[in-house]
Image 1 (cartoon, rainbow, N blue to C red):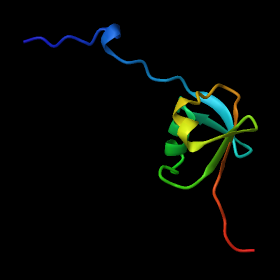
Image 2 (image 1 turned 90 degrees about the vertical axis):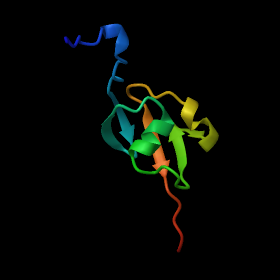
Image 3 (image 1 turned 120 degrees about the vertical axis):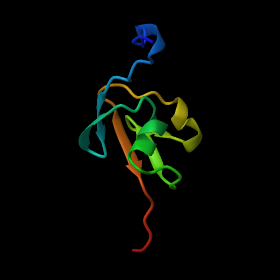
Length: 82
């Protein structure tokens, strides 16, 4: 019995890493979308606000917001108190 290596067409390519700025800090990520970045950063299910390049992105649009190298992303969590 021989085992063949998978053909390149059988293997899904890994997403390339992107260098973005997240909350004013340089970050390398493999997330392809804003939603993927939110999950990667541990905010899945959290009430947060997001923006890409200074434009607010509502929660419903995060899965369709593709990230690009050099994007500036803000993830903001609400605070209470005063």
